[in-house]
Length: 253
Image 1 (tube, rainbow, N blue to C red):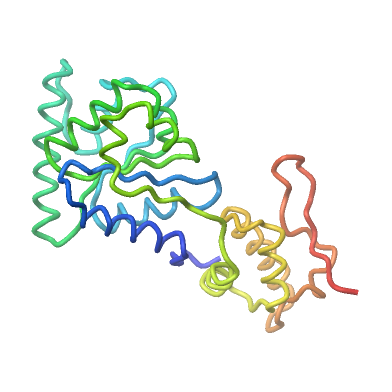
Image 2 (image 1 turned 90 degrees about the vertical axis):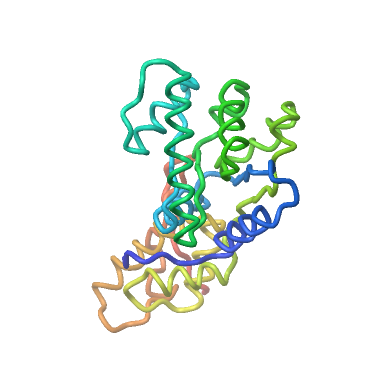
């Protein structure tokens, strides 16, 4: 499989959300929520964007505290943390301000990204620390979760009022699957198999990539051939993650 990043409709939704946040009227609206079921490519897309733009990526933990979060943030900022929360907060403000100014000079969009933010979306102390950093520096904070963040934040008006634009990731369209197959798959794939891959994967990026790998395994045994449903009839394309059972290609009879 080619190590290529393919721009999908979800990627475009994310960029549109960023643009809407940049165009916000109130300067304190610096939170962007990126929500959606697991397997829709959120982490892949956000990591790609962070790498390109030079932002900061953190992955929330179930037992995170505000101090633990600041220590990890300072680690990503290549700064040795002080011992008190107050000093760590000041360090974070200083380093984030420096990185934000550098990004502005370079024409980049600097942001602090917290993945798996479902772990912290009901913990006011964590959210308040992020709000303080965002308000103080006017830098975007992107909260990435699995479909529950927006609902959880409604209880915290001081946070929810700062959400400039929620972005919901959705299952891939046929055009997305066509683009993923064209960009990633190293064998030629017929349209009927692309359509079945969409149907069997239900549009989940994780499953689509798993299916592409299965197609490649068969395709390498028949170099130069276009792989269609007939060629893969009865061959396992995916594994049902709930049951562990194989999901096989079925050619039309």
